[in-house]
Amino acid sequence: MGFYNLSDFVKNPAFITPWTFIHLVSGIFTYMLLEKFITKDVWINFYIFLVVHIGYEIKDLSYYMDYNKIVKNSYWSNNSLPNSIGDVLFSTIGFLWAVSFKSFTNGQIFLCGSFLLLGFIIFNYNKYG
Image 1 (cartoon, rainbow, N blue to C red):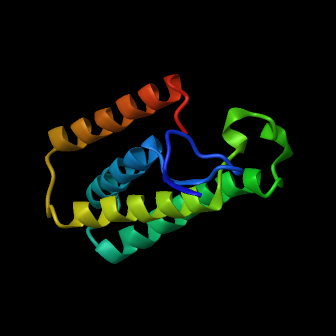
Image 2: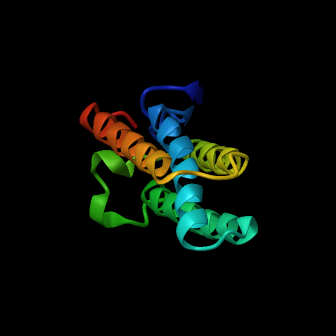
């Protein structure tokens, strides 16, 4: 197992990939959206965030565990447990970091969302993972 690699594979797992950065920013962006549109209660937002993000990672691991036959041989069907743990950790760091900012303007939320979308497009195009 490697600590960092451009890609994560079941046979060559990586705790951190370029997508780790996307998870960090998604934690920040998720907090911004929840705080603005759902509730100001940090704990409720944190629980919503964890349920959604861990659910997403369970979906990734369903490919790893061979439960999801639909995408068995696709590029995205090769996710490792160490990488999912890293993704949850870094998205949580992003979320908690955003909590420390206290408040956001609409422009900052838009900028963060744009940055997230741009990273997603670039990483998908380059097949990082």
